[in-house]
Length: 184
Image 1: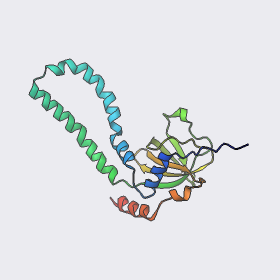
Image 2: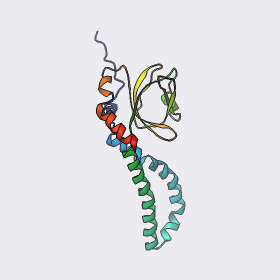
Image 3: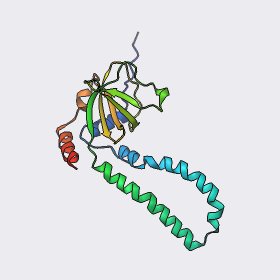
């Protein structure tokens, strides 16, 4: 009887992310996701305001309406430009981290993912730009991430014992980019 092939935990999308991150770069999708992340929250907060003020907004004269729309656009675009510049220069970090004895399950998505350094220090990943990968207790993982003031952003992750793991380790270009970006 033929044995059913085991499904690979590392998806094609994750492979693309790992190959870009190993050179110290973000993929185009990761870059767009991290820049536009605040827009979702902003839309949730602004939608009720638009519904409440919608009728009053329509009464404004055409000149005032254009001015309000222009101001809103500027208030939206300027922070996105600063965010884009910040992440274009942010160094990508790499570490081999351990999942610990009880990794967070998918159903607890509101909690940060916590991984551990070889020294036992905990790194909390409050947000992620990587597809979900179920973590096994005690397993080591290759992890690429960005450092934020309060937390870390998970860029890509793969089991350290995966057959393709050596292809996903940092390259010389990663080290060069890291040194250049860490100075800024």
